[in-house]
Length: 274
Image 1 (cartoon, helix red, strand yellow):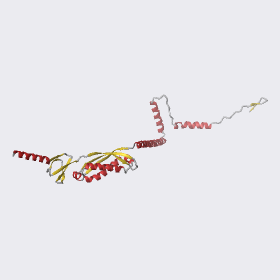
Image 2 (spheres, one colour):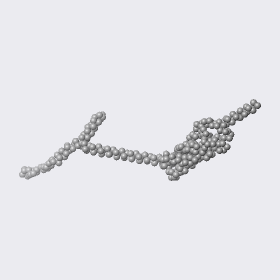
Image 3 (tube, one colour):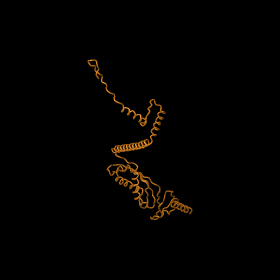
Image 4 (cartoon, one colour):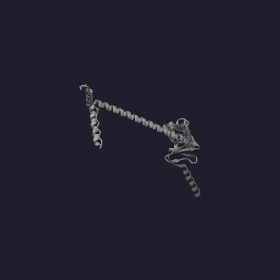
């Protein structure tokens, strides 16, 4: 009799152990009772089910990171590439993720690979290299639209690496160098244009205020005096020399031309003829 009671107690303890389940904070449980899903989802914490009538399926609600292996892609301008990416997704509806798909993670992995190849095949290489953010957003939008009926949310897609053909890498490097040279020339020309504008404005100010020329002259003399130079050059503004230049020109133009004097030849009678 005592042995039967002990056996019953052991069976009850085993049944209770099968009925009690502890779910972590990031887990949810989908319970099936005789094959029918019980709503709503269970968890987190201590969950009691009627084992073995009820069957419990655990689903993680954390973000899952999956690396898309390198895919062979041919762009719209017929350039073969190998492109790898990374996808971030999470389950937002545990019942749909369990009921709609046999293995939701495998389904999303396959969908991500095919979507990556199809989307990159519609763009050119320059867009792939320069518009990475727009491309990532487009991939996320397409994947999220397909996974929403499955109860899965694609939170982010990042194109991680683009492997170019060896011969194309040199061409792209030369193109980038030419682009940098073009930008440098444009910046240099813009700087010269701005400097010319400033010089023009300074000339207009000096023309309106002649005193500024003298002040600039004195400033230059002060700078020369501070420096330890063996040779000192004194710059003189043209307006200071204009008076002297004008008087010298007038003197040179108004002076009489000297007459040429021909010496007299002596005559046979001793008189000089001029």
